[in-house]
Image (cartoon, rainbow, N blue to C red; front, side):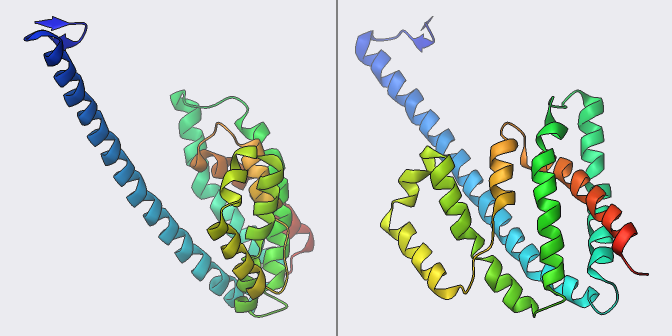
Amino acid sequence: MLHNGWRRTGGRGRYDAVRREASGGRAVVQRSKLNRGWFLGVVVILLTLAGWTVVPIFIKEFTTDVDAWTSNGWRYGLAALIWMPLLVYQRRSGRWKPGLMRAAVLPGVVNACAQVMFTTSFYKIDPGLVTFGLRSQILAVTVGAALLYPSERAVIRKPIFLAGLLLLLGGTLTTVGAGYTLAVRSCMKGYGAMESFAAISQYTAGAMIVLMLILGRD
């Protein structure tokens, strides 16, 4: 028989055995989910690394054909078109989360400013130096996270984390602002990564296209 979810076959010891068996099953399921999450995380990191690797190369190639304003306008204009179907789908399917576009305003403005500086830098210095310097944003993100998010402080205090920061600081000549990362964490809580970036891209693309039409050549 079943009694409150447990099989009643042999006294209290049997109940305990069944509980242990069920608990072990839950542990296996949790480990399976953790393994899948770990694998997905590694894949996402590798894809991010690939994106960071090829984007500077493409932008540098564009410097011989178009100015920075035109490069940004076409690049983010295309990104907005790619991401817009996701927003339209969520709107029509009833999965739209209220306040998404309002929350994306600040990250979109910060990202637009960052993209202007990011792309312009490739017209002034080599792409290798640009990407090398950008890694110093990790320092700015860490400081901002320590100030704004108490839950992050325990991780930041770990010796291995501090050692990594010191190595990064020693290998980086300058530091850059990380306002975009902090703005996303502050404003986009409760929204998924894909829908957040889709919304931010719309604002960034709008700014980039307007600047291209005003300041771009050809």
